[in-house]
Length: 132
Picture 1 (spheres, rainbow, N blue to C red):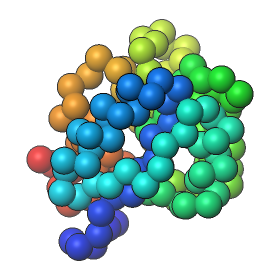
Picture 2 (cartoon, helix red, strand yellow):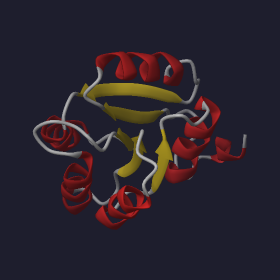
Picture 3 (cartoon, one colour):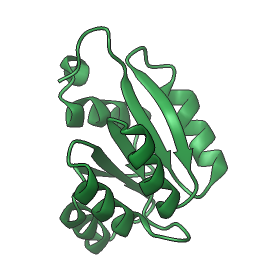
């Protein structure tokens, strides 16, 4: 549970820079959120989690080097406090199931509304603002 003066620290992991840029812009407009780093592949995401210990990782599934499912598995094995939210264009239930099995706290499709993503970020960290 975060204190009232603490911001949710977020790592964005997606191989498309334009997606990361868009998410960063939207997330940083939230007074209770900050993007602390970006990763262009799963291996970089795992390394950045070790270095920065963010509260939340917003993780794409299909990335080079290491996919989001394997990266999620490694992150959750290394640091069980870090919450992972899968965010992907894939609607196939197998991908959803694999992300959740790997330890993701939630899974959203990229066509969701930003408000849904913001609520999910707050919910997975137990923020009092999650009900907004």
